[in-house]
Image (cartoon, rainbow, N blue to C red):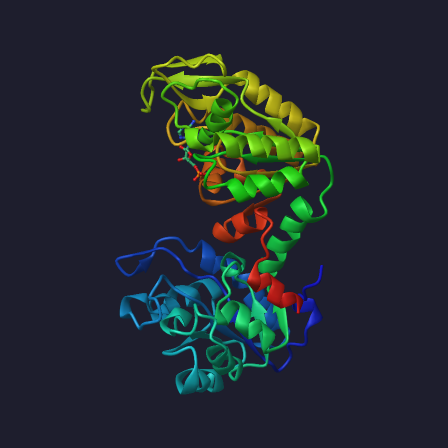
Length: 396
Ligand code: AMP
């Protein structure tokens, strides 16, 4: 696959600069969701088991190159210590004497946590001088922060060129799942793209139609495709100025042999609120005073048939306005079907991107998917076919 893992790189007796994503939500000085911290454990434990000294490099929030005390990683050192069950030594800078002294002091099995990399003005500029200062601290670089891999920063990209570099276990799992879904997938491949607007997902749609066999378009963005084909959608969310773009995508799909699936029937309502009166109508029959807020049951049945005929599924975006019942029905039903097929071993299912994780969790389906990416922007850029600088640097 081109990148090294912890299995390919000597770690015994080495100081291992380990880039992680521990940018966790906090309230009143307390971590409110430990997921990201808990997820670094396999990589940390593996490095220690192989005789390496773990030195964590991470960003926190957006201090924009200045020292902002509220954004110090010192505030989460105790949470990291609790999650890892190991002593954590916090260094008040990510370079220079404070960092070097903390590393020198650490005993085998103890973990060093360096201060927020984004306190350094050179971090987001990928300043080679900053990367060189970081490189002085260690012998090996391990990147376990896939979610930061779409940014070429000193601690994600620059540093990878200066030391022997490898992917951590979390990065490795993410890259393997993404490779299985779009790199060299088992075909047929179906992609589901939903969500509010076509305009935010143009690159995504443009890339997918050249790579997948079936593309299911749902959510508000399906309305834009209906309008482009001359179908009236009443008061629905639709980007009427995107018609030409939508038609381009349809033409590109046709040329590439990708079958597009748009809603056949839809759920319409006059109001977007819980328990609003909702009707199912043909996608061509949205009343002038109503809004399309979900896909209908015939559409769901058609989507399930496509899933049943596919080997690989990649999913971003809900099929309807899933936050409010009953407009979550299509997303829930399709997600449950994908979960069941995955459980049966008939489907490899990969999903990701902000609202998607919430929607699949809400459907109770996330646990059965082959892989759910929580990487957000990095996952979307990968789905768009873009090179992720943090990953590319590991190939060097
Ligand atoms: P995105 O962030 O682009 O994935 O969009 C997710 C948002 O799209 C969610 O907040 C959904 O409520 C919204 N959405 C999905 N379908 C519709 C629809 N038919 N009309 C309005 N909003 C929708």
